[in-house]
Image 1: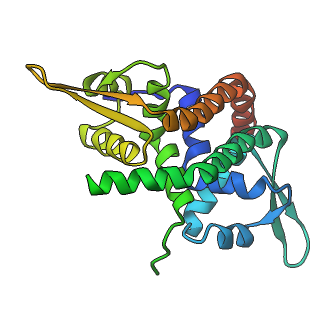
Image 2: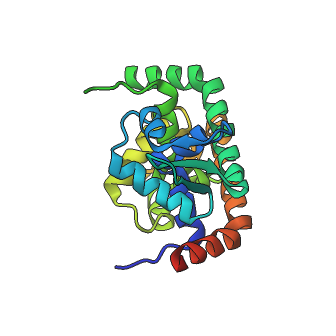
Length: 114
Length: 114
């Protein structure tokens, strides 16, 4: 059963994917990041997953990829204005989670004890 | 290499997981949902994935699960106040995506043509 996904749902999946969330959060500090820097920041991400995530976010217009023709050449990633819009929501969610983490941890303890 | 995930990151993954996003969005309409109703709403979700997602969100204190001891017994799911906090951020992100979807679709077309 092939159910085509509506565009909004596909975009939501790109933005809220495991690595999409972390890339958008990292880039939301306003700086330009190199691939290697993102890879260090995202610790568990494989090279393939990070490449795929960056390509998806670039295709969606959230991330700008700039190649610097120097020796050795390097690539930098930054958020576009559209990307800042999406990232803003994730940063707000992350702050909410940070503020409410104690209550979630208590709920988990109650659940585990029940 | 076992890298333990900080609690906030684990909670973020629960809330932004593929089915977590959709369950929280569905429940954010303020009504009580039965499992079968959620299953219909989430179309592609397997019974196992939906069960696991609901259990994770219940354990985090976002979803309240109530069993009605009637014949046949049934179960209803609602958002807790904590769940409404998390869901509110996702609903805001979904509205932002809906409003910006045309610009994303244009970016995708430019990327595919390049």
